[in-house]
Length: 270
Image (cartoon, rainbow, N blue to C red; front, side, top):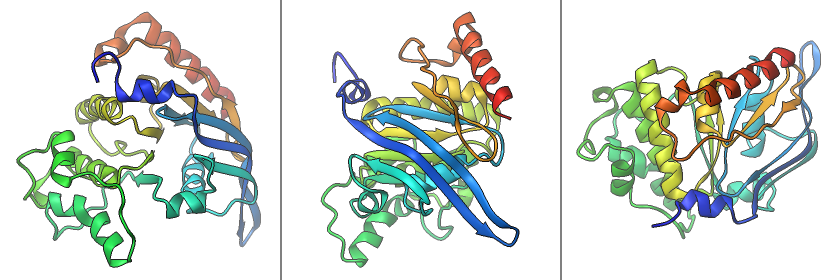
């Protein structure tokens, strides 16, 4: 698009992509019932990019999994484009990217990206919308590496393949659980920039879990900060930074002030 990115148009649509209202998630264990999330509520606009911070064990991953219909909800409601998580999963509204790339070692990069399409066909699912795997590998910067096996790729390249695989069915929502947490700082910085570029070009709504305050501030339009067990919303501030963002912005006073505010919310949340 010429005057605005796809993400900017989508985020200005006024449509709510994810709505979480008074969410409670409990788990039954040997020692009794544990409340992982308690009365969590927030909204994510279509085309928005929301990062998530919180102490270890506060329920960040549990929240993503509840949205993805991977964890049962004890109380409250979740809607993804006005559908329940189960309905959204069946409609393939979202895709998940984990910290581990989870690539099949015997399949090439291109064949790993194709995998969701093949699984859908075997399951008798009519794939009404999907992207071309070759185009997605080019989108994540891996044009020319289509035939490479996972052991021939660096950690950063593997995560690029994982992101391309998640995007192949054109999900409306991308849920990312610390996808760059195991990478070195230089690779992580590069993938942060690449992810923002992909988000701007596709307009996909993204929720991104991280333990890095600078990463949360650099990537997100908003940042959801959770408190320690049970997980509650401690804050949900806007992150107002110039667009398009480049790594140099992290050296500005504005960025330092934003990260300082997020850290103060985290200190109270612990």
